Length: 232
Image: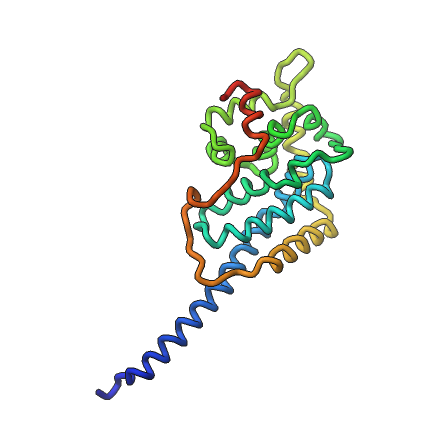
């Protein structure tokens, strides 16, 4: 019938469109991941450096986290990416390793008295800005338990009371560092991101899964953290 494509031509057309759609998907997913990473990389680099007290070690942890995230993100719904990324960063082996000479200067000094897990609790709020429910999801605890852990991690005066001025200064300093990051530092983080993305080619045909289907190992320090806070 006039206006209808012959069967063989239709089949060839369908195959061509399938290939083009696959190529479009292969191009779109890395682009979406790169866009997501650009939106979080300053916070991620700041958190990693403050978490271990060593910016260079923090950069190594960030690189490993980006590479691991590149593996998991195509299999996860886009809405799950933020919590997936922060969970991946906190479980990075490089971030969990003890640096030789950790140091926290100025208004970040209160972080020095905290152990690894408690420092992560406070930095997810101060640097990343996660609310109680979001941070609790990263730590796989109830929001009330995370809130209690955060309260115990806040700066304290000699008498054990909360040091409100130090808490505000910590928040202000974190915002200042991220907003006024030197251009050369921003460029360095971008190079880390681009190199990590380039090392992880996307495989077309990946299926999005729910976050619960993605294997995420709890950091080794997580059980010790909740035990120290009396939450286990």
